[in-house]
View 1 (cartoon, rainbow, N blue to C red):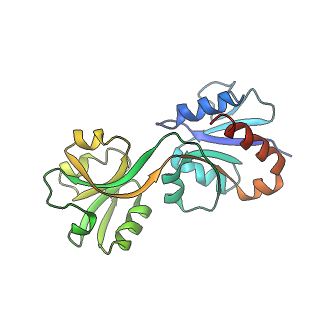
View 2: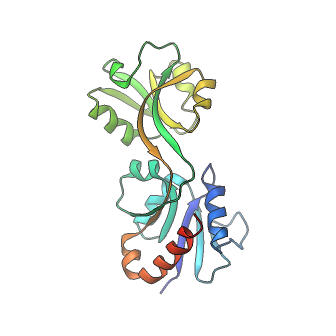
Length: 209
């Protein structure tokens, strides 16, 4: 039977905390940083470095047995994976924000047909539908905060940890879609067929939280 593959973000705010957590559990990459699927100091365990947004895809399809990514990403993909632990780091909120001088104080104030930019189209669409606001979702990949300033959209749905980035770009939050932290997720088949290995690994990681 193949050993365990753990997927971690290849960049971004979750990568270093994820690697530090694995390191503290005795799982340290021993291959070059440019190697996507790296061997580790623990025999039979490899670390796969991919985009945080793709980690649920790799775990759901059984390419990786375990993965570390944000709850926001898991919710956005909507894929069925087991969440085995809240890892506590990477805390942030997915918020609705508009320009500082906007008269809108809450998402329901946005006019019907408003344009909203986001990297999370599924979560944003569901949120506005639940609030009875019909919006046009524009999917962007990065630098979402600049879109209202340039007049592309009326608002955004984006991650915010301290609010500083929003403030620097002349934006204010008017609603929260969800709160997020890093989660340890598992493929459903792996959890059944590799139960002992998975549980041992999960216990090692939980013991370092």
